[in-house]
Image (cartoon, rainbow, N blue to C red; front, side):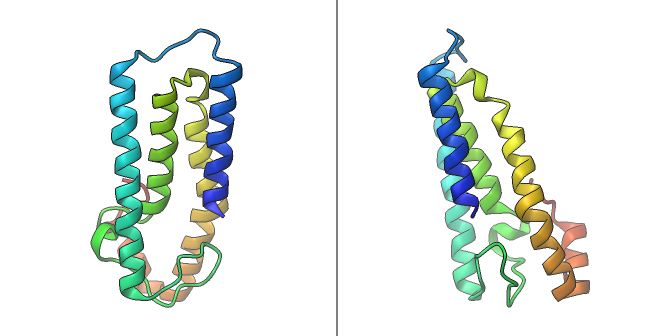
Length: 144
């Protein structure tokens, strides 16, 4: 499940900053502010996506085939608002914790989400909703 992966990456960043900080810093107040914005924004994205899933009464479980394809609300802007929110949370905590050496975890986490969850989900949507997904994929970006 994606939340387990997020917790794992957060744990790696926490271990890095508490055990191996190497005396590096991201700059203090601005990093805390940006980190807070990213964490807050990630939580808002996730909440908006969950509301759409509930409204359309379809599964949120990544490896299940959805009954409906959501194209409204936040899904008009991004095909993966929950995964984008996960990435924003990770980036926000890394900035807030001043975990400089953990910055490479962000693109690695995005790669894991793409390969393990997004690509298989999009394949299921492509097989299930064919033309609808093709149109949606053309007009809505995967991340932003």
